[in-house]
Image (tube, rainbow, N blue to C red):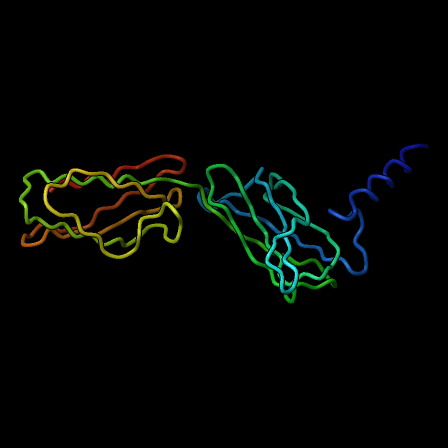
Length: 210
């Protein structure tokens, strides 16, 4: 006889965050997060939903959950004076997923489905060795494939290495994807492509001796 009462009490306590039943002014946000590095659902990641009020700057936590084994998540929450919702997905050794969801894009009439994907982290070690260095040697290499716009990503465009080079440069990349550059040694016929598939959760070396 106590179980219905206990269930109702739990619903009352949690409804402001997760919602035991969708109310007439509630949003339901649901979807699936994919692990693109392995072409599989992402599981066990922490998913948080934040909100920013109109004219505000702060992020207020609305709810959080953990991805199911099939990569699914679901939030039911009261429609508030929010201008933009923000969904974050965090898992160790994966690139954090952060998506803005405008209030105007949501509806209370049906579930709001938002599917996203992220990738495992990998690292590339760019190893350069000038075996017969001269003072005026110039190596030019141009990044052609590889992750961009992350804190530990190598910059896009052209990089120059001068003189007696014996160095390693580390960059982050999406797991199980190609990192590639094309190189030229100035005033010589030495040039060509270098590439490798960077293994997820590991460091892959690309060696250039010239």
